[in-house]
Length: 152
Ligand SMILES: Cc1cc2nc3c(=O)[nH]c(=O)nc-3n(C[C@H](O)[C@H](O)[C@H](O)COP(=O)(O)O)c2cc1C
Image 1 (cartoon, rainbow, N blue to C red):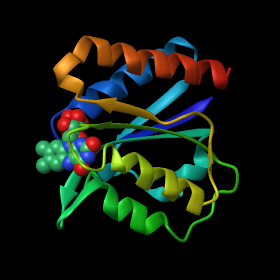
Image 2 (image 1 turned 90 degrees about the vertical axis):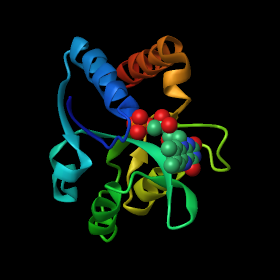
Image 3 (image 1 turned 30 degrees about the horizontal axis):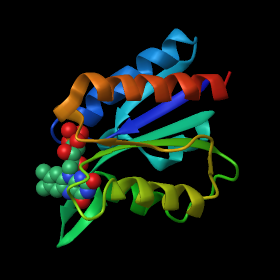
Image 4 (image 1 turned 180 degrees about the horizontal axis):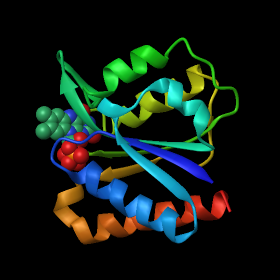
């Protein structure tokens, strides 16, 4: 399968998680292109069999639970596009001490729904990545292995 993984990251946790997901999917013989959302364009969505979106949750303009700010131009540009039935998977890093834990995942799920895409797995929500990195990396690996099973 041809897969596009798009991520954004501030302190590197979402970036590290992307690497884990890519390694697992490549091990299962998939082709994966990885892009920082700053380099991604919504017109590319149609070129891939599966799109994976990853984002930390952040606050700006007084609102918690937002996707990484770099996602905003991408989401804005894509919002009037339509990709009926296009498979998507979403993962998000956050911290449950915030009011909207992994709110970015909810935003991205809504985005997928609005452009007619289809979520093919339950979104992954990681709490406090660096506070228990080993265990959280295992959760990312397990999620990616499960995703690989679903697209086999
Ligand atoms: C200023 C700031 C705001 C944050 N806002 C939220 C939030 O609203 N919801 C949440 O679940 N996590 C929030 N977090 C936690 C981050 O999403 C979490 O630390 C994540 O692992 C960062 O991912 P990254 O290493 O890829 O940047 C916030 C962290 C900071 C520093």
